Amino acid sequence: IISKGAAAYTKIGTINNTGTKIFSLVGKIKNTGLVEVPLGTPISKVVYEIGGGPVGKAKIKAIQTGGPSGGYIPASMFDLQLDYDSLTKVGSIMGSGGMIVMDENTCMVDVAKFFMNFLKDESCGKCFTCRKGTQRMYEILDDITQGKGTLDDLELLEELANVVKDTTMCGLGQTAANPVLSSLRYFRNEYEEHIADKKCAAFVCKNLVGVPCQAACPLDTEPWRYIALIEKGEYEEAYKIIREANPFPSVCARICDRKCEQKCTLLTSGGEPVAIRALKRFIT
Image (cartoon, rainbow, N blue to C red):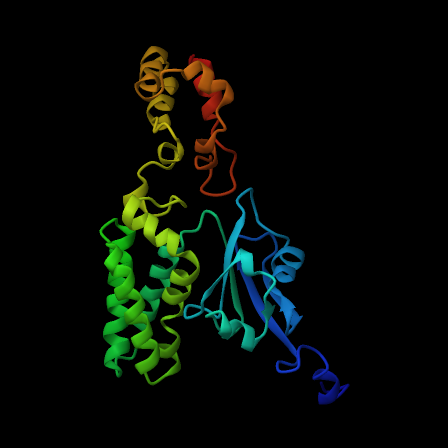
């Protein structure tokens, strides 16, 4: 700007949103750090070209922009331009330029709960609707992640979020509803799964998952049990455990697509998967 002047700078970006923006790119992505791009740059370019795409095999599910009070944007909308107007239209904000990348191992209900927990503590308390509304939204989200939610809670959650958004005095209260409203808008199916099916597809909500490898198995076998027995050399007992849920273990040990291994790694993230199918084949 100093060397070329304001006129040259305003040629960058879009008609209504000129210039550049620095984003803090973090989350489930290969290249993290500060990224400066012209306003109007598609999300896909930042995530896949600059960010390098997902870290592991899990596909990218969404991003959140704008910090704790920002909204979620699903991967199906990554052609969206990164500018103030476009983000506002889809229920998010630019904020200070935060961009969190989330993959299939991220539970959108849990993330909404996480940020609502932060926002309720940040409320100064002057506005009753913000003080009580953020607290109540957090409580409902917490119930849903614990398997205690009802479908009626979704209507209440949406109503509360809109009331907080429309009746509070400052920017925090007016944007505090974004995590709830955007996650309900784009990922309502995850809320419904938590409530109706008592299931967390991302295997994050512990009360709904139990053991991730078992929850991932279509037959509900218990790999953690028979792996422990194999480690002890108790092969016959391990075989019996497998047969409890699977009458054809030797066949399964050769054709199974190993969904369990995707959820059972040697490290908390990014480690080598435990060779569950190979162990099953060894036993049979």
